[in-house]
Length: 148
Ligand SMILES: [Zn+2]
Image (cartoon, rainbow, N blue to C red):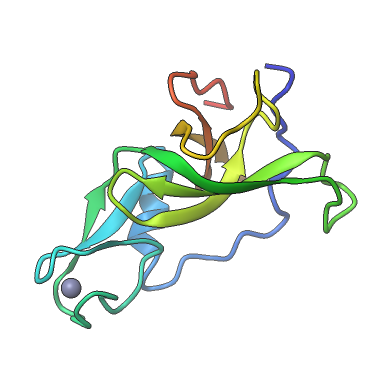
């Protein structure tokens, strides 16, 4: 779709570390994952070494996330920090169905009547040159017509 912006992939995405390796591996299959604590039940993202609920370092496991959520807040960016970024674009806090809030792109920048807080969204993916992929969010029900 012509309104999708594909130019926003940053030149360098940080490499995986010991905490994020499993997360990044899953992105290669376009699978969104989060961490769940088998001790206290908290679900967190991004991946960490310690549970932010109970402090456990031994009970974190990777779980598949549904890839759905709702817009918690968003902003329409008109002045980009890098000249190659096409404006306007939307950066949003998305509350995942599992609970964690992620900061991500929404596309298209201005759909239909515009974005509203509380709108349902679904994850989509932009592939990186190294095989990993970056998640972004689209209106729920929209198909991922990215570079699959
Ligand atoms: Zn915990």
